[in-house]
Length: 296
Length: 292
Image (tube, each protein chain N blue to C red):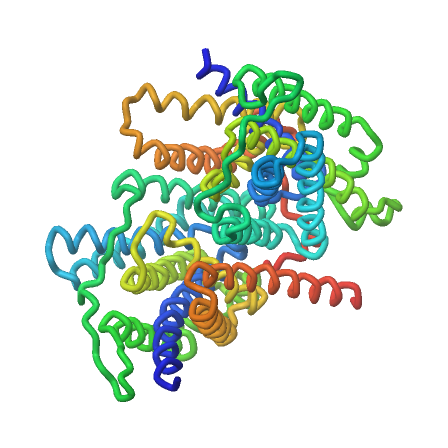
């Protein structure tokens, strides 16, 4: 039972992360690889406040959300200056930078990571699997609702115009930068909150929890599920949280599990892009634009 | 003091030789691919591991290098035919194409981890033997081999690029792919050649890099980041001199940072350089578009 609840927690957290990626990439056309870093920043802030600082939960959650928003807005600032492929590379580099900084900074435990004491709210422990599952699934529901609402809002429509053609959007009087900033602030808040849920559930944050594998996994979930639809992220998260669990039944040694996950995520990512770029439920495939300013 | 700086200079030169080869290989495959692609990390990763496996079996270092570099070349041609031609014809955005290549790289990391495990291995055939130069400067055989091999490879590359028909046609493709096609250059064949040659250079960088640092499944990524910086400095054009200069600057900066702040802070140097140069290049492009 605890194992199933753990899977639900991971499904909820990664579903919310994939949903955030879908908001930025599926609606805004900005595919970032820095979600694992933003997620890690939210988790580290939570761990730092709840651990060494012994701060209350009501302070740690808004702080994680604020850091998520701030970090994603930095990404948005980079996005406004870069074209398409260059932006993806820059965000991947930003992720690498984050990993290097947390692994070498003593303030956040360096390579040893940070331990968090058990956090209780109203007598309920946030590290209890059933409570964590309820919180993670609530966060996932919130993220899907946000994506659904965004799809039908004027901001969502403006974002889709920006996604298809930024020049056309500008000629229609749409402020492309403001639209993207609003979307990325919303997705940053979700990612920061996911960091809080993760840190308070596992009670330990470590640089190895936010590696390039996680950065790829989040994007893989969004693309496999399908960009531009609220349910795509949920389907992608379900597929990629549950599928690797099947490896446990194959009887591989524990040391090979990480390698098998890499093979699975990598193959799925390449296969989806090459064979089914719209994903399982997607309605949008980012295409090359004629006035694209990339260096091609 | 002079001895310390000279020693640091040797370390920087050895790093530069590896980075230079990776940058040349990366730019060569950039000519037909036209986007930052992570399959460049695959030969950097696979070649030293193949060399390691062959050396373990046969005991011959030269045979290990030859087989692994041949495998890198074949892999380059194969990936071009199977993946890149398809991607090029797809009309997807550069980001989506990049994501596909990241998937291939991630799968390759998994395959290496599955076969060789997560433990680090070394392929230094000289077991840290060293030559002593004046001023008590110590140059390991591995460093000397890296510097010598890279110098020879860069010279060969320069001759092929500047003085041969193949180089001329590749330069034409780098300048304008459509015009090259109009001029009846067999673009696909030369693109496959560029991929094969680029993968061999990247594989060579991987093998030489494997002398210096222990091989791990994640070993290739930092090298490719440096190669991306080199490509970004040339703003995607085949400016090999600019790429070599960028490689030299990063090698010197990393060595200086490692000496001053410790080895752990050396790797972020190239990441910071990549972000800064991409943002700078993006701003330049935006400004030039505004002027137009």
